[in-house]
Structures are given as C-alpha cells and as structure tokens.
Image (cartoon, rainbow, N blue to C red; front, side):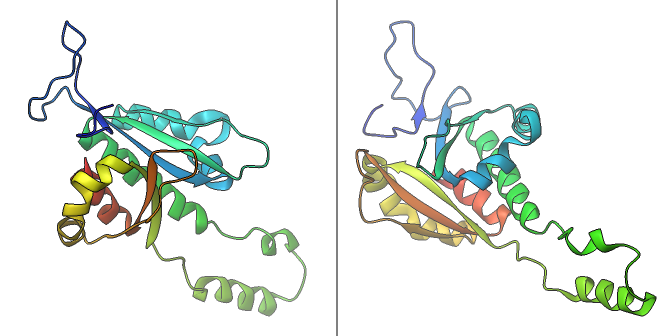
Length: 198
C-alpha cells in the first residue's frame, strides 16, 4: 500500500501499477476495526446470517478474523466503495446498539408465579427502565502514514461535518503500522465520518 492512502486502492492498470488519478467509481476502500468477541458474534450472527445479509444489502466484502486463544478482540474488515463501506458500518453499529437493548429474558422465565399485581409492577418496571443510548463508538484501525498525512489535517472538519467525535491514539499498535481512531456518536454520524475519512 502506498503512503498516500493505504486504506484505498485503485483498480490495477494492465501493468499492475496503481493509478495516482483522483478517486473514481472503481476505487475500493478497505477499513478495519477492532471488535470484542461478543460484538464479533453479533456481527457474524447465527450461522453467518448477519454478515451474509450485510454483504447482500451493501455489496461489500466483509469478514472477521479468526479467534486467537487468549486474545479477546478480533479484526473486522470491510471492503467496497466508500459509500458502501460507510453504509455497512452504519448497519453494523446499529446492529450492535440494538443488541445491547435486547430485553432480559430472566424475568420472563417465571411466568405464572406471583400475583397479577406483582406481574403488572414488573412489566411497568421493564417499560420504564432506561433504554440504552444509540450513542456508541467504534475503534477503526488506520495506517500511521494515512493518519499523519490525511486524517491529522481533517479531524476537526470531519467532526464538524459528521457530528461524530474522533479520538486518535497517540501510539502505533504493537507489531503494527496502525493506530486506533475511536469514532463516537450515533450510527448515522459515525457512518458520515467514515465516508469523510474514505
């Protein structure tokens, strides 16, 4: 990958060299993110259904790294057009937010027990319980070179345009050339920020 934009690669010319022309419809953005094992399970879904649906809905190539013993994080990789990658991350983040708001089934397993009034109070309590905020974050892996040459100059503009907050790490990850950029906000804001990054 080149130092100019290692996360984006243009379609190869017949000679195999990369085009240095402006971005066009044939450009592909590959954007990686760190997710914990629980999030990876939500993204993949039962039997791979969620990730297959994601691919079908957006046209991206998406996958998650294999489990490594003793490591509790996995790498999510999404490749496609800038718009498709942004849409895919929006769907992924929305899915993660909604998975956090799944109702707790522990209280429903005690059906038939207790008085009708007690059940009413329990139901009211569940209805009044605070719902998880759609405000969330995702940890993107960005090449150190790309961070310094592009993102570093545009972070404030991206934050202003998207409404998302971006928090870049100061250090390169161990045995890597990437840094983490945590993008915080609602799913639509994060998607907009990803599109601006791309």
